[in-house]
Image 1 (cartoon, rainbow, N blue to C red):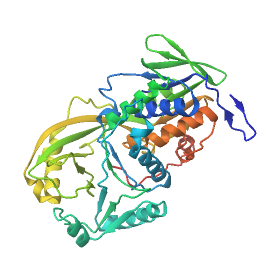
Image 2 (cartoon, rainbow, N blue to C red; image 1 turned 90 degrees about the vertical axis):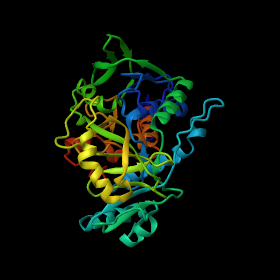
Image 3 (cartoon, helix red, strand yellow; image 1 turned 90 degrees about the horizontal axis):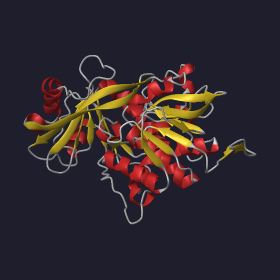
Image 4 (tube, one colour; image 1 turned 30 degrees about the horizontal axis):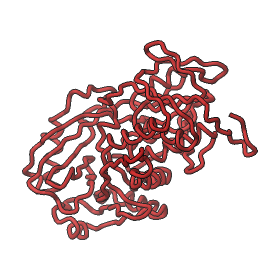
Amino acid sequence: MSPDALGNQQFDPSMKVVIIGGGVMGAATASFLATSYGIRATVLERDASYARASSALSACAIRQQFSTEINIRISQQSLLFYRDIGRQLAVGDDRPGIGLVEPGYLFLATEAGVPVLTQNQALQTQCGAAVALLSPLELTARFPWLSTEQIALGSLGLSGVMSGEGWFDGYRALQAFRQHAIANGAHFLEAEAVDFDTHGGAVQSVITARGERVPADAVLIAAGAWSSPVASALGFALPVRARKRDVFSMQANAPLTGCPLVIDPSGYWFRPDGETGQFLCGAPPRGVDLDDAPLDHVDHGLFDDWLWPRLAERVPQFDALRVTGSWAGYYEYNTFDQNGLVGRLPGVSNAFVAAGFSGHGLQQAPAVGLGMAELMATGAYHTLDLAPLALERIAANKPLVERNII
């Protein structure tokens, strides 16, 4: 690569890009590299079955209701892509679908939370997102099944050209990006990256657990919850940890008319899962939020002792329901500020990171994947400036504070 008159790098279609992590972020980047720049990346998948991947175990929602402009902009761009994914990622006559629906997010707040919702809504509106603030009476009129006990305000995302909120099938999104990347020349290899050959502050090759050396002109660390050990092999302490989250599937007596994804002030969430009275719900763990907690144990006490009583208080109809399934998955949790870490890895000229999204990686994958493809191929962002997510904010101790963390 060589600099142009603007100081950006001219891309070379023959450059060897290695992406560590075959989840949706890595697959999206590989897809954009291939279609935008003709670069055929090699993607190292730690586990090609995705049995423990966040992309396969997420509740898979997308929203505009963030408190930082960069997150709102990323979601807007990603939503436009997901709405058009059948055309964007078509392979021959195969037009993938992800079952995207947009009933909105409903954030509920007590009196203490009113200033935050009000300030957030002002920024969201400024960015073009349609978000309505609803009083308890307006909430009851719109959602008669909802108890507004101790609720002072609700914030509801509405659908529009630049706004919209809902959920989709994350595993199908992952496979759509993956198959599109492969069809355009990307190579997916089941291998675990454990080390690097470096020279002069640049990566020369990626070393796998089997001792293979994969040549690299540029490397992207997008290994989700397992990104930190990879970055440490390049001398960088990436503050990303695997934090377990339990999700419960429950059957109610009947569906709730017009139900969005609801976030209660006490920290739990629930949303419909189809139209037959089936719902998903979840909450942060009880007690200490441990790193690398085993995924084979779901804390059913979290539901029985903590979640169910609160669900029934908020929605009286939930007094009678039954759990029909459950699973656990990892948040790739950024302990520094719970926002994505995106951009060049400090101290290594040709290593990049896209990790630490703390629960909103799937919804941000189209915009971030495109941005990473642009940065690696040309040395700059073009479509959306992702600089606010740069890793340099860690050393500068300048967290990007996001108040709407779920």
